[in-house]
View (cartoon, rainbow, N blue to C red):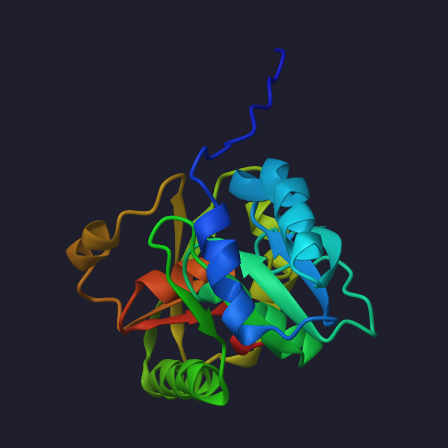
Amino acid sequence: MEIIHIDAKSEADIMPAVRESFRFTKKGSKVAIVSTIQHLHKLKEAKKLLEENGIKPIVSGQVLGCRVPSIPKDADKILYIGSGKFHPIGIFLKTRKEVIAANPFSGNVSKITGKDVLAVERRRKGALAKFLSSSTIGILMSTKPGQMNVQGGKKRIDEMIKKYKDKKFYKFAFDTLQKDELGNFNFIECWVNTACPRIFEDFEKGMINLSDII
């Protein structure tokens, strides 16, 4: 069987959002540019625009899942081109550098602040409290290649089950996760996501990432 990989490129115009990001950046600043794969092919355009406006850009590359590309230590800040706050908050937590999030689809540009990070940390603490107080746990396991190893894979899952012997664990395999379908298993008190950590962001309550437990 031959596997063909096709990049999911977006043709959204990133320039308006990049221009809007200038209000958060002083001339002469050294800025690392990162993006998801959808906009990766347009980063050279962004680099040129920043240079034309007196900013020193460095194309650092692609953000993939919870993995952040190498960011130069002397970068003053990071420009993230993409949607949502999951990636820019993750970048901030890993680099502790100022992150400017420029959304090409909405045109909104914002600076990731301590309040954004605090909101995420509070939610994680709440999810952990829910997990610890629950006796029946559902483990969500993706069948997509590579997803099972994102948060440690089978080894980490086994560690969790061994550590929390007072809980009853049920394993659920999925390809595409539908939020509403989880409601069919109302005996599950808390879900543990073992795939991409971003899935956690799409659920309001009752879910925690494996990496936040083990």
